[in-house]
Image 1 (tube, one colour):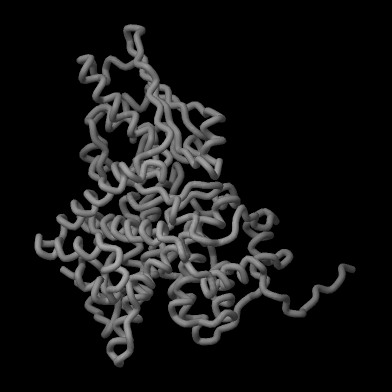
Image 2 (image 1 turned 90 degrees about the vertical axis):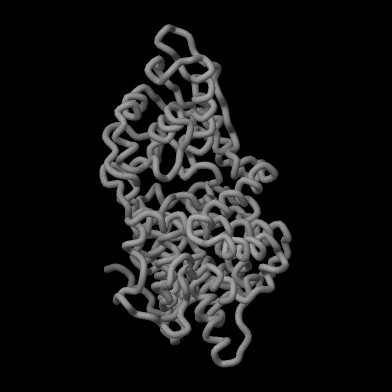
Length: 483
């Protein structure tokens, strides 16, 4: 007979405790983190506004029951929706992620920490409107920036050493966990209640990566983060009622997350929680492309210019070699037919072919009317990806975190172009001086998609001023985005 399993309730897993103590007690003192968070806020909301131009995104937005308006509810930027915080978080989160154009974190697990803004902004706006309604002070945008820094840190630090993709799970599990932690704190939960909320997030069913990979790649990858951050708000609200948690949700033998979903391996950690992730986050500034391809797209843009100067075309190309890092090959090295925009923006060959042919890569270039150009697939067939182990090592090096790609073009006549190498994309911390002006220009462009000039200017004046933004009430800032 096997020994009976003890029914003594254990202490909470240390992973839960560390997250709870961080959100409750850690004071963010980094000026760089707050400045980067402000830029991240602008960029993230701008990405959401651009998504409103796509009917496939807009059809998912609004209340669950059409026509529902929630008194003192959270408002959805760029729309007239005013919703409960759970559905508002889904709306904002889906908008943010739809075009694969918001920030990125690359490590053992990759992801997009600004996905958490869906739950953060919806909750902060809802809390602010209800506070003001009863004569209490509203939350400020500094509270939002603080929550963003901490959500980035939780998601990013867990991702550094722990690969969820290798066990088939989607990275949005970390959005759910990080959003749960910071939203629970915003809701006023105490330490035990935050631990309970976190346990509910981990015990929840986790998303498979099926919708990100051939042959099933599809548009759920564009709203999966909205689903995760809204689920976080729901779980935090459940925990606020006093609902119990599950202290050994990760480590419980047989039934815990580690044994069921992580091949029995406990999480490893490289560093304590601070503000490292926000300070080092990667922005997608120039191209709405899966981040492992960003430097390849920059190289492809250079090739387009060289072809023009040489008076050559894609038809003159015999072969393109893409020297890259292992993660790129595992995620976006893709042959065969591409069935939809979600398929195309996760194919490095497609994301290289379009700029070589047209000298651009925009969100519209993933749509059917562009993809039907036969020259794209012809050029894709001429490409081969090979791993450079030095690129892979630099990708994982915490002092570098490069995302290197190198392209070599060979022509039918036997000549070839010198290899073009790009290690750090324009959105990398090492290129902030070049990147931030372009990020601000991207924000201006996205504001102009939705708002009249006077409204654009009001949003810009506050968003570009660190002190003014931090001091502004959340609901007043969100009101500027109502159309």
